[in-house]
Image 1 (tube, rainbow, N blue to C red):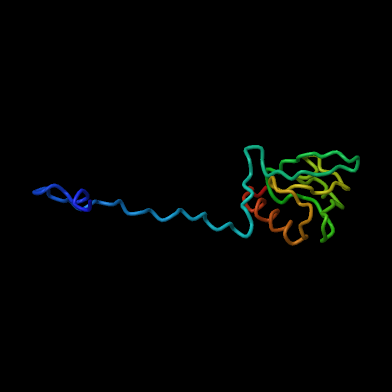
Image 2 (cartoon, helix red, strand yellow):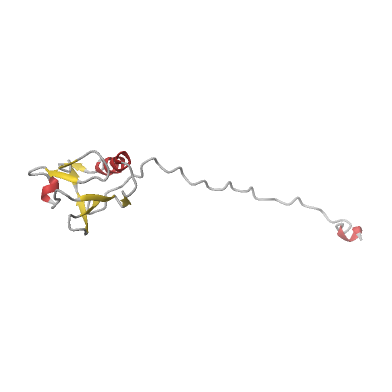
Length: 126
């Protein structure tokens, strides 16, 4: 029965050509801070209003023009007169709940600021 597995007499055996296995594509490492690129509407921060609703605000230029206490959650404490923030309707008392599409809940002040700085760095200075 082993003879049945042998090639017929006179047959030329060609070596099988095996395609090299491609290494599995590795996912690129995630950056420490995902670049929160501005949309055509600008860099979006979503704020919880004092009334409890949520309002997306699109910043198109820097500086943004508002102040806040350096702790999480980030709550707007002051709008600079004549600033971009005033121009687009930001108000004191609003709380940042999303930066460039990433929720801020459970994040530290430092992590939130990394997201903000990343997004703002891509805006045009005024």
